[in-house]
Image 1 (cartoon, rainbow, N blue to C red):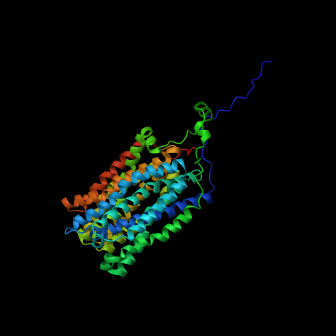
Image 2: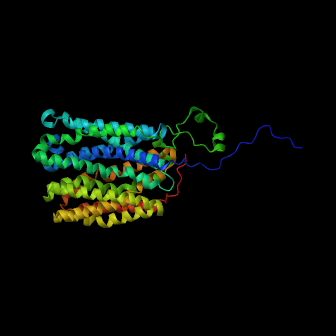
Image 3: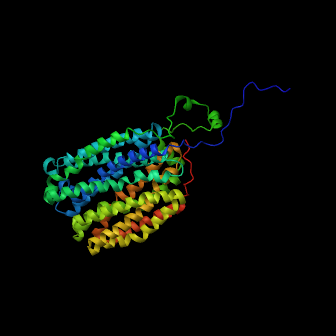
Amino acid sequence: MPELPSQATPMIVTSPQPAPATDGTKASRVAAASLVGTTIEYYDFAVYGTASALVLGPAFFPSGNATVSSLAAFLTFAAAFLARPLGVALFGTIGDRLGRRRALVASLLLMGVATVGVGLLPTYETAGLLAPVLLVTLRLLQGVSMGGEWGGAVLLAAEHAPPGRRALYASIPNVGPSLGFLLSSAVILPTLNIAGRDGFTDWAWRIPFLLSTVLVVVGLWVRTAVSESPVFTPPTEASAQAQPEARTQAKTPAPTSRFPLGTLVTRHPGRLLLGIGAALGGSAVYYLTIVYSLSYGPKSLGIPQNTMLTAASVGAAAGIAVTLPAAGLADRIGRRPVMLTGAVGCVLWAVPMYASLSSRDPWLITGAYTVGLALLALMFSPVAAFLPELFPARLRYTGASAAFILANTLGGGFAPLAATWLNSHWDSPLVLGFYTGGLCLLSLLCLLALPETRDHEFDA
């Protein structure tokens, strides 16, 4: 009889195991908590964007030239986008090494402190040069916070999602940007009407910023109550010191990178660049519609402020209405068909949408914005699942955040500045259409180059 081996042969697992499924009720709670967080963060951001269009220029950057004051105010708006990559590096490292929830709680707290701080700032008339310096500092802190918010929120919802419904659950926190804008409009419009334009310019502009205190307290309470992602297991000293051969046999994940952003850039540069390009055009459409046009319409075309706020708000509501059905469709037929449809629509509709401003007709403008932001929702709804699916688990927070945030920075953060400069040379709303249409065409080409990810498993 042959001699038996003294030790049993270890079992070799030949494929990574998918993350354990989360029950629907728990997944819904996590998605709702993520939505609360993104809504509050984007409320804060939208309040600043609207205030920069209405009042921050003369209050903090007074000059004899209205265009110069607007450029200075929009420059502080863009400054926050420059700080977002730092937020990606900081919160991406926390999220990929220590946990998604910790990163999200920290980002929300930072945003709340910075936003309330803006509401308490003295103006240039009171503090001189110190006022714009403090404004830019707080704005940079807002940018750092936003760098970690979106990726973590959609990722936590996606990783808790039941099988076959990842795009739907990930799209729930993706409603936050539009919902945050609507919430900011619901505060700013009554404040503007009650205080009047002069009262709003003098003091009432602070009210929307200070109300953020209540929202942040609620958001922190909700966010700390949710569970950590089921695919996230903090690395242990034992696993970090395990022999490479043993890790290969067991097919366990490699230890988390000490600097996930560096690993992402060196190992997945193509996916990162294409992911940035895929979200570039939509970012321009969003920020030109809800930020720049609120200033451009009244100042350059004589359109009443309430008309522009109403048109943008109705369009944002249309985008919200489209988001969840579009995500459900992306779960059934794939991410790319839905996103490509939205991208083609944005390319074709960009010029007519902004050309509607020339009519100065509130119904026509509102209708054009409604169609445009609904098409944008088709392109952006599946992206909440699509971008995380492009990257492995231990780089997923950083990868999704970096792609989306850099697209927002390049396509959205500098859009008001670029549009202000373009309109100073070619004073026509058509310029906005050609600018955004070109960026949406670039997004379309990047989407064509990326693979379908619907069947990609979120391996642990």
